[in-house]
Length: 399
Image (tube, rainbow, N blue to C red; front, side, top):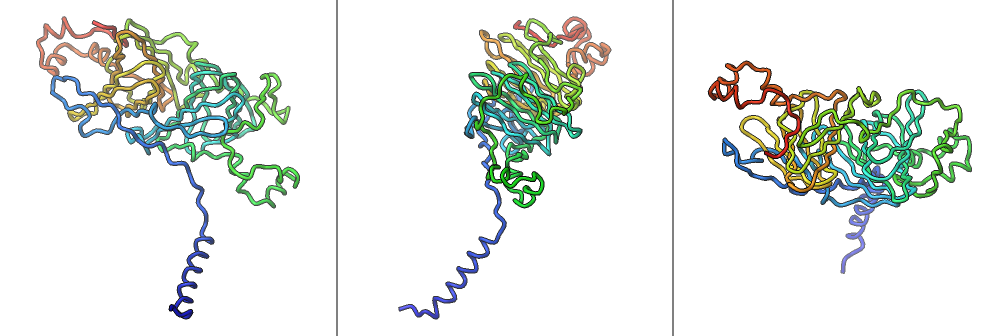
């Protein structure tokens, strides 16, 4: 039989441990980032007999296979450097909101938000530090840009809901790092809330936890009735929404076309730019690199093969399906090809710079003296003059 005197020290020890755990600050449990899944790396023939992908991170991430996180009113999945290591400077979030649902009022302290409407219609509300506001509706093919730290919300208006892709100029960004209005209010001391709002009745009605996505009041009403609580709130002078899909192509050829929105076409988006690229069956976006930006890609339709040159004899070829993500670090050479000889492909491309700059291989070659090309490539002068390109051709069709 165990004596009481022996049990007492154990009881005291367990009591002290339990007290310490209860007194310790509680850390909010965040949803884990979507688990990484293996990318599809191809190994075609090269002149140097390259083993593609060797010594390199994957430059594609199969977001199409990643699980959704489900909320009351929508589903979300995301990718950034935490599950897609190559994507060091850009992260992406795919969001599907049900009709009438709202992505609650929030802001991002660590990134700007560039977004593309894939399907449906949304209403965005954006407020800047000077108390100016924009309330606007964005349909399929439209984009918006929210500068870092500006308060905003997103409502789904279409009867079928709204699907869109959010792109952030910080690879470490996650939705869990967003600052939600409901989260702030629910964690603030009640006496401060009462003093600030001047109403105990209101404070008692406020949310007791983070909302994130809500269908509490799904009737947004027509745009003309969506006025600010303060009717004298001034409008933001420069629009933060833009019709990307409605633009004329800036480059077009037998292999595809490119519609572009930089800070020239869309001044509000001062430090991010984007494009929609169409690749015809077997079409190729030729060899090039970007000297001022990383490139983030999302396959909207069809398939794509992404070839990336990483210097030092290293290269990678990835296959991407609809809903997958590709990434090319700043300065890395790359090309994009539609592997299908039947169906076109459509790719959303986003850059973490407002100014679009592209160094195209054929255009570069066309500016170099014959002797320098012959010496660099170790080919006869005759081949340089007859076979190398003399002009830029952004898109190339099948040959």
